[in-house]
Length: 373
Image 1 (cartoon, rainbow, N blue to C red):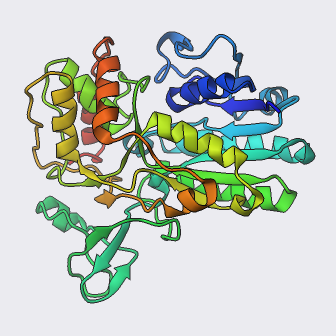
Image 2: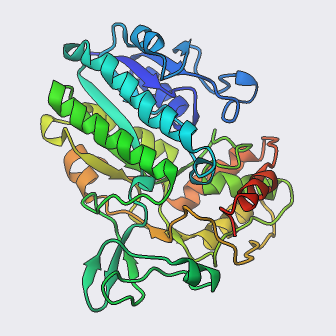
């Protein structure tokens, strides 16, 4: 039987793809989105399917949320602010939109808790902070450190908190302690944990999905705080070398938006045993940031080597790539799209876009505030 669905943030990058998939399977879809100009130039829901019902409103507005929840069975909560760098500047705004917005949604759902079959919350790898690491002497460790002095000296790898020797990145499981290093990460951790606690307390079946580095068509190319693949694509489309922080050897797990959508729907349909837990949504494979920059350039037909000036940005992590076994076992989900296939899809779409390149202005602001060094 088709669901009656609310997608918060449904006009955005992941949200619009999710809406398409839900409509295709016959669900009735309502979207609550504030159409923020940074993600939606001109306040236009450019990628939202016409068959979806669009309600323009703010997650922090209880009346708007109450209206959006009317007659809904399943809630996909994707709405919020994204971007580690910007969150270190707009501290209050990120916490307000992400944490308070989620609290407003939850209070509205609690008031009619029996109405809902499932709540799926989009969390983020940013909630981890750095990923998991192994020390030669002490095995798997948490609470690794990257000191200011080491960063300024170009010594990028984290240190074991026990012996202070360099550690090696390993696949991150959902049991990794959450130690976010950016305001965005804090807001996503709080969003996730609040949702799981409230869902358990009031009998709203809730699942949190920790998306890793999501990429693909419809990403906001003109937003300099969006995902790294999109930022690189924008620079390359302007004939400029992609800018890479640190030494470019940071490891990231890139997951295509189509796989993220399948995981999100799988979470809504999963059995009761899956409820109340977080799940990594990733590929379980890593690519270095410099390798990713070269791949995007090749896919866009440009011979551009990344620019690696040795600068660093506070609030960034060194390595994070995921163990996806829990999602495979409990949600019945596995990624399908290889990085090469996904980069081809992103490049084919981006080649037809005309984005503004705001990276210099954004980096200047971060540098003036001491975030970028």
